[in-house]
Length: 463
Ligand code: FAD
Ligand code: NAD
Image 1: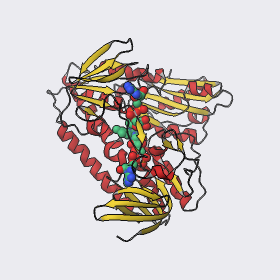
Image 2: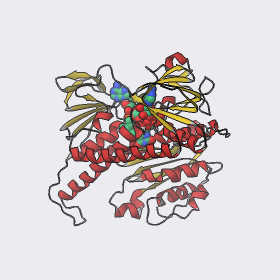
Image 3: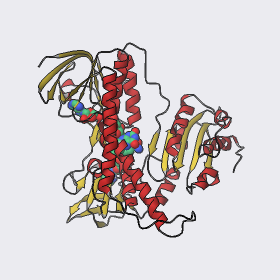
Image 4: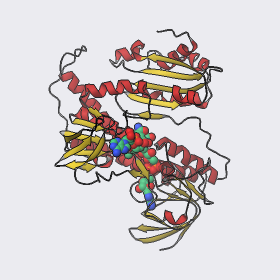
């Protein structure tokens, strides 16, 4: 097969890789992208999109079940609803398919050459790809590693049989009667909540003293309350020890050994970079722990080799990967760029949702700031009342000396959509007065942001 020579080679077509390739193509850079499975990566095929599809279906089913139950005050009643999970999964696969084709179309539009197969490094600028029609050698001036991540396996609970990762959980065709989730982080709680809403009896086993340990206890309260309402059993400070006769063996926080029967055991204890088994070891790049070390331009320790996305470490989020991909494409095209983001927002799609950008009050204090905090509860927000979802709040964290906003957080129904307002405020260096002085449409949950800023300034209007 004829060797391909190009200016830019991107390995992996996840959100990091495909965005990098599209932008490079738009800028006229001769670009090749290699993908071993399907365009869109983890995010589009077995991550963000399919999980949010399942979460939506579970929410709708839960809502209808609620209407079929006791009086709900709205005057709506329905007959006993049923869920056909196999059909839900087909619907989810349809969305994935549409996005998949969309990404391939965008790559073609940007004149990016797509090679299907697994890349293996020969040296820092040359890879071999095992394609359906033979070995394809590709030589490039610049290489971008965007190979993403894979689930961490627990030695006591290796994947296989009834022990599954998020990938399998997103394609179950029947709702499990009993589901055990090991790891109460992002995936465990998003999917655990969804399955509880679909009717599973869910047990979450979390090693740390708190589920979602990266969030402060106040943000977590409404989520913990809702888990309780859904009947999810949460064991914190607990260790999963292994399997015994279709039951998960757990050492509880008090040192007791307990068994929890489960049809499936979903292990979600984090993800690790995909850095092994494809010749990367021989490049001898510098690492930061298990991840590839990068600088503020996503350069690795080898000249002309960049790395972006999950393979470079936390936060392992699709929008970070995309932002890095876009930046690297522009650098390769000769533009002056460096990572100068003030905030990478994070959203946890639990019930209710949690959104954060910038510093929490404790993080701000730890950085030496004296802080001014304003918090506005959704039970004082008209829109929240009319949607019967009043739990949660918006919180603004600002420097006490200048009123510069350094962090914004919220927990509540639909607050994921506040993430752009939060990031914009931080990127633009907003002060409390800027947010307070901006007209927020009524009635919306976003009024909570304006009120949180007003509260921090000492003159909230609606509490
Ligand atoms: P990936 O998406 O992992 O893509 C890497 C690509 O490289 C893959 O397609 C892989 O096949 C390919 N590849 C690897 N090795 C080779 C090779 N040698 N040759 C050729 N191709 C190769 N993030 C969010 O921001 N929001 C969410 O709501 C969210 N939900 C998630 C839900 C789940 C269940 C999971 C698992 C993850 C979720 N994430 C979410 C995280 C998000 O999916 C990742 O941060 C994102 O996909 C990382 O993008 P990436 O481009 O770095 O890598
Ligand atoms: P995570 O890091 O979010 O959570 C893992 C949890 O498992 C932690 O709470 C940890 O304390 C716990 N844990 C670790 N070892 C354990 C053990 N032996 N027993 C019990 N608990 C244990 O990881 P995840 O949920 O696997 O998700 C991986 C990554 O994917 C996330 O870090 C995030 O970057 C990304 N993701 C993002 C979203 C989103 O943005 N909404 C959704 C899903 C995944």
